[in-house]
Amino acid sequence: MSLDIKICGLKTDDTVAAALDGGASHIGFIFFPKSPRNIDPVTAGRLRQAAKGRATAVAVTVNADDATLDEIVAAMQPDMLQLHGDESPARVTQIKQRYGLPVMKAISVRERRDLDAIAAYIGIADRFLFDAKPPKGSDLPGGNGVAFDWTILSSLDASVDYMLSGGLNAGNIAEALEATNARAIDISSGVESAPGVKDVSLIRDFFRTVRAAKSADAA
Image 1 (cartoon, rainbow, N blue to C red):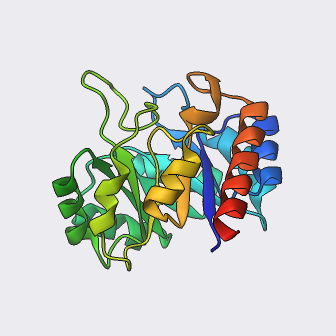
Image 2 (image 1 turned 135 degrees about the vertical axis):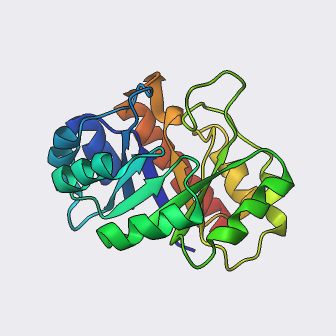
């Protein structure tokens, strides 16, 4: 089984290179001022050039208005938009129509009933991203290094296309893949040496661990 891997919150040439060389299918750039991973559209536009023909470049926003999205899309030219806020199905539809880009909608998960939220987006969002609900008091909707109970996903219809996110790292990715059979994963804080600081060695370690887990599963 092929596995899509997204390294999110990239900000430097060397970490983009490490993600691509490791085999990332997606690289993500975050446009959210409160995040330590926030990047400006022009820099993201330069960095994403390395992904052309190699990986899907994703622009991650949180309840962004049209003016903000216009600036990001014009400067970065992303392949996909990730909406990580409270965007309604109507707003997702509007954004897809405005930019003609596929959209991944993030859903915050803590308990099984949180998955009920996806029903309204079926047929609208091109993919889902399941992330852990942020800890109380956090200003960040994602990138908090928190995992949720992966067994919750066992009741999910197999037709739902999603990326698994939330607290993933080299130490738990094998367990996460075994528990969920996820076909796509997203990692951000799990390959950082400090909040917002991606670490090339941690990125490489993560890919090595994923490859080992996949080999063991195939054996």
